Image (tube, rainbow, N blue to C red):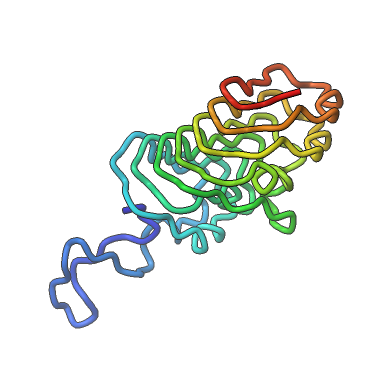
Length: 193
């Protein structure tokens, strides 16, 4: 499981607890307030992530859980000052919309949600994409629908990859307004026009 909290092998009265039981204690990732990087990539973590306690980690800028067996929902704005979030190569089925009111909405620069089983409309996924993002990767999922016009509000975007999905429709004219774009990959979709 994702270690938001730590295992505690004895309960309040000193009795031995089951090894598979996770306890809410003062130890664990959720209470490491000065933590700057979480890298749990390429392990065998399973289950879902409880994001609420992690939002207390105000110093955390890098979050990497790629290459595991995690499922549920992705929250790319996992902490108030996140800059780099990598959820690639897991079993996530959806992604929480980007919330403009969160501090990390202004700080997120890199997000990779590739190689999951995300099934959602691209408008829901990209409608509120953070304005300062430089790299966004969501290749090899099951994302469908057309690209939104709101992409013209991404002046820092350098790399964008949504290849191998189920995108449809035509390209929005707003793509002409991405001055720093270096890589734009939407191959292996169902685009037209």
